[in-house]
Image (cartoon, rainbow, N blue to C red; front, side):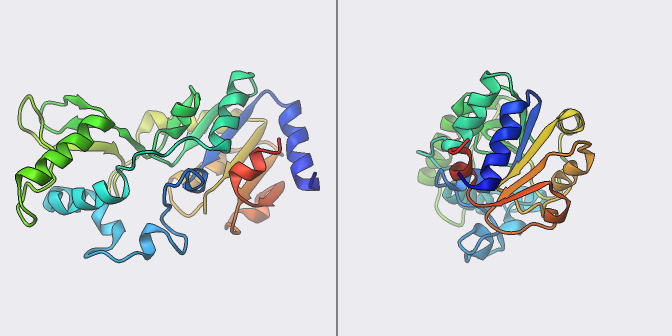
Length: 253
């Protein structure tokens, strides 16, 4: 076993207060695209840049265009939890992992069995009418987007826009768009978990998206682990850096 993996395994085996903080790289092994890699969404061609499409202003002004992108790239079916998701759920069940803090919106941690999941950027699994606040799950929102695609033509304002059955209002995904603030309670609980952690494992994130990336500044321990394919701006602060895919690393623990 690699020396660094062996060290991580030792720390995990000896701790019952582990916190995991993860980004898009955790889910790429499940077939969900990230944003910043060579093949990521930011390097693909659209009529508008993805960061513009995924903004609050764009959602409000060009809802149809938003949903065209959203359906194509974020309403993805068939993705299943990978070795990282499953290992984290296993560690939580064993009483070793206290929480998963994630920047992902796919819900795969919960599907794998994790219970204490702090979703910093929300989830595609939850959707709410902006007018009456009625709830719609993933399957319902996908169905409604498809219905609106059949009912209206491309270029129409309501093309692909899901509407509420109860009041006719526009349904919005419970995801944090650019220009929107993170949920205060989720941030507060995430800070508390990180402050109290013995081992903090950070995986599959470039640590480039704030304020989420700034959460690691609250860690007080001496077992900060960074697992990522590429170097991050915080590598020099870590007690252990492992270059690799998080799922492959976790499968060796």
